[in-house]
Length: 67
Image (cartoon, rainbow, N blue to C red):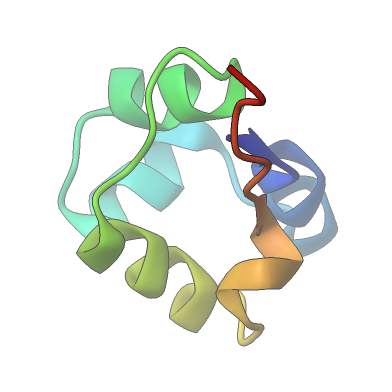
């Protein structure tokens, strides 16, 4: 799943650590999401969208595999 979390974080001028504390997750979780190494739970995706006052689709783009 593609995401623009880093862009949204930059717009809000918030660090990975600050965002992680706000959402009660590890900084490494935010880093892994940004790098595309971890897809967040639906609950965390909603929390991220709520934090940035946007829709989930603004942050995440889901493109199913063609396999």
